[in-house]
Length: 372
Image 1 (cartoon, rainbow, N blue to C red):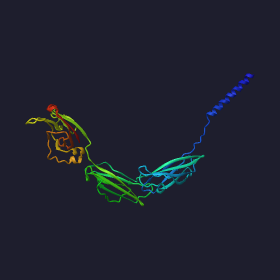
Image 2: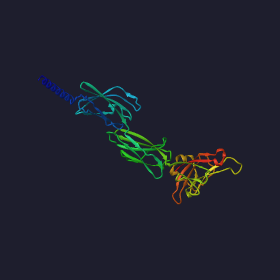
Image 3: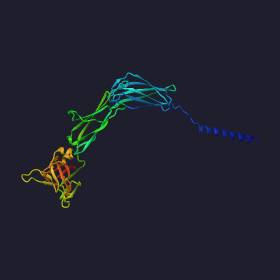
Image 4: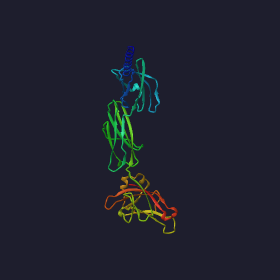
């Protein structure tokens, strides 16, 4: 009988311990998460008179924050004033609040000037501190495309005058060519977001247009300048090839390939030539001939560097040649060629190397690079 009593007590105790373990496993620990707050600002430009900072206390357990100006600095980071200034208190209602700070409060009004702010609150007897920097932004943005010296193409320089809170009263646009030029006002009126038209052929390759946009808001004004270079409307394709004494070999400029002159028809454009001087000896003369529909006009180094499509396609080919019998590295030729009665393909080529080892004709060659 005693054995049964002892066994029953043991079972009961075991069940009790199991139940306690389950309760312990299901127990939820609660932690004091403290508090936090986030600071945001709508921003400040040189046309604005103030900036607003907004507080978000998601736990909704702060009643207020004190705000202090710690220091301010110029565009290079040089401190203007490090005398701390009490800016007041932000009262928080249902976890949120805001404060509007004037330029005078912050001590900044020029682009890239900054003010460092400190925000301090108290929760459960503990101090919580956060920081925010407000920087004066440029209210004017100017966006210019890559403007090329291209026939009949109109490009648009886009601009916007966008303060955060103030209303823009007026926008003016002026342009000049080159840093030494004189600004001239363009005919308005202009909207706060607008554009001007620029035609590359109204300028020279290498010119730089200065576009100055000025916006006013109340007693304030802001000006931004963009530099817009006029680039050549260049050929985008570049190929290289070598001409030598290989029998019947020529080069097809259109399809960028070597061809055999006996079978290629009018697709053979240029072929190597070499000869000894007829009289008196001397160095080997090497060059090339333009075959079939291909024509050559002597050009300059600038013609190749710029490879301006508009200028090259406007080249006068009435005095063109089909022979360049004695060339040197650096020589440039403008060319055009076509197949049958089709349209001309234009380009510009440059002799990059002339090889005449020991003056032997059979070992001579010319290396050429061309844009088309």
